[in-house]
Length: 432
Image (tube, rainbow, N blue to C red; front, top):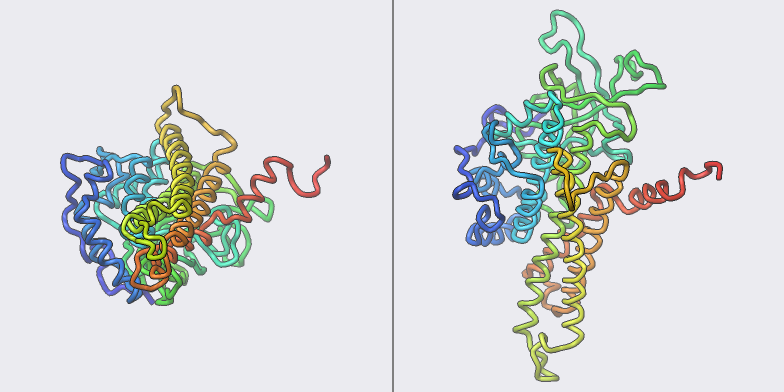
């Protein structure tokens, strides 16, 4: 049932990783201008043809992108989440869908890095696989599962029997949605509710339901649908993935957690890396829109008034408004991302904050504010740039579609507001 015909243990285009010159992880060195221009040109074709940017992936692999968040002692580049955030913003300015799809690998390796820093043993295999240039995808999202990481409609049935080669592992059955990198991933991180084979919690009863997280490889038990045909972010190819008793062996189990919110290191790492890297991509899109808007304003002339639009006070206000909103988001994004890096390393000192019980609020809050500000900024640029940018030939037209995908990523506006309301007011119906 798998859509892949290649050997899952050998990526189809996996040359020996070549890190950025001198190990420089600054965005401009890691992703040079000429490479980004190539990505930007390809993005037009992949958006039009609804195809995955395999050559972008090959180019990123050559630069060691898959090893970005792997510690140097494991063969990686030793990057921090803050460095990854900045690099992702830069990549999103050229090829938003490429950046968003690569986000999913960075979310998994970023979560593994966070958990590894805190001493979690089960994540080492993820980092070693990434060091060996294996591409990870994110198989968590499920239709109508608003709890996301903290519950699952997928079942995980224990594999028993001494004669089973997979004894001690689990078989996962369920449907995951929005699985980016659908045609090309090598490993898929999934979660499911532990059952005893009859749909009941495995020996724990209804009072203690548990989730298990593990790493799948491509087998006939993993069905990747070819169903991605969307308004924007078309090149991510975030296809539906169906699991039919897909086995995760004991050595590929990552962690088990209770159902419900918790700060288990890998789960917290996924939540934080996901929200912050999602925010990074949409912030990068908006940064590019502001750049394009400024270029248009300096060349576009009003025939009626005989002035360049850069001198029009209304145009100036709109572009300034877009830039103000994005500057504010960047400051928030960099602060919380640096704090998460520090939490993992145990760093303390001036300017570093351990947000304690408010970590999850800040993760989701930054994502919410970033995506809303990005949409607003792109819209302001469109309003300032004229009707020609309603045509498909315009980069702004594509950016305006890509940025709206941020509406659908968790945490959505409803859940963010519900979380903040609960923090402020307690549960609905609670005694006052």
